[in-house]
Image (cartoon, rainbow, N blue to C red; front, side, top):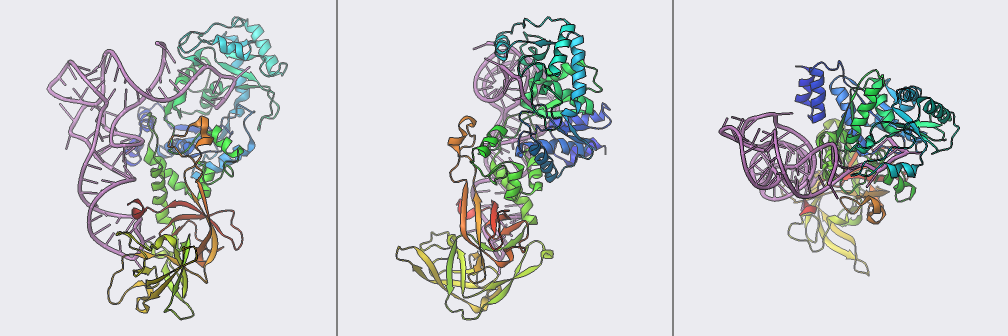
Length: 555
RNA sequence: UGGGGAAUAGUUCAACGGUAGAACAGCGGACUCUGACUCCGUUAAUCUAGGUUCGAAUCCUAGUUCCCCAGCCA
């Protein structure tokens, strides 16, 4: 079986993998080379994860390689902090660029040389128009643009001006270098696009060496060509840049001719994946930072407890296509549960405690055995402390239960997981009429959770010992936005006021206290949780990664 | 009204002229010391109108709807 056939059989196929397979089969390339080209002006988010999985995934599947290249052509927005975070995030996601770490800034000198060649060939010129003048003469979507009065300068004059631009003789915005293509093109990207602009700014890598910086369009394709990239994969909005991408490659003596392919970027319901908006969420203090667990950033997802394998699984499930779409959050949740169900050990915790006194239990307490993973005996067992007073979940009791409620209610018998059957005998309320305590009885014969007489119970609920459990803070998360497709212009108005719910009185079994907690962990019947870095000695903090499916809650 | 794209179950993605399939969601059931997991079953779609063809989601024509482009951002 050829590599291409293997990929089609094993991995999900999509139109880009089809193209790669076909190019390889036809011998157009010996090996596939892709690249992931982030601009270090923010943190990576789940949309980038889709792109990373695509680019690195293709390289892996076809036995090629994928470069990590920073698209650092705009020093006014880029920072070292982002460069470091991006590298860490890509690694965390599970991908390795080996020796192939590059920067567009590595190529500044070559790009500059090629710009001079374009000038000498009469294919580029220095324009003195102001930004406003350029905008006015660019035409509109339906009308052609007009030539700049500087369009026909001599090559000598252009060269002189361009060199002086580089030398820093002119202030920001005074002049630009433009390609001379076609001011009447229906494709506005071809109406003499800007190649270089003057920017007196310090670059994270090149420092103050440059006073002019190449535009994305001028830098990207040539960088691909220098690196021998074969398939340059980007998102749909660059589709009408492709003729320009190709124009540079055709008009410059580049070492290779990569091809650009476009796919639809990820859109996630109730989520914004715009670096600008994410940045504003952080700077506007709407979230606690780039790694706030509500953020769709890789840092935020990681802190929430989402394993990288879940993101890779998600990427595989959503596929790759050219149609714009809006992915349901449920699909992400499914991928997270899919991975965590297999890997997370089980423990018991009570989020909203309701005290239960077992009136006929007199002993000093005892320890009962609990399994750590129902499908993995190798995970072993642990002992959990039981006593006369325990806490159960408030949601697991109803004074007047509807027909289908199987848990605790007056007179009802349930199983305490790994412990005993108990029956609710009485409900204690405070002066305000709120339920503050349940009085129950237990059946000593059901120790361990099995009834010797074979009687069944309709529900098993979780619990923790009142005496031996440890207090904890638990943070629950909901979507950051109230609408499936938030209006990016008014995102502040559409923030979900209930995106964070902090439970300060949760109780954990001691096996979840500092040092003991497995990672990841499932709180039985509740969901998957991850210890937050805000945890302090004696004061654990847990984030709910995702809840368990709950067919009762839905009904 | 210029240029570039896209339309298939509720959602996301397949089907590359030859029986419209999958995953998620939904519904029904089995199992269960997690109302979880697992398993079984099931509902559900080709934007519209013409045309070519023995045969069209696929090719052609004409429409409709949606997305992107007028940064010295990427």
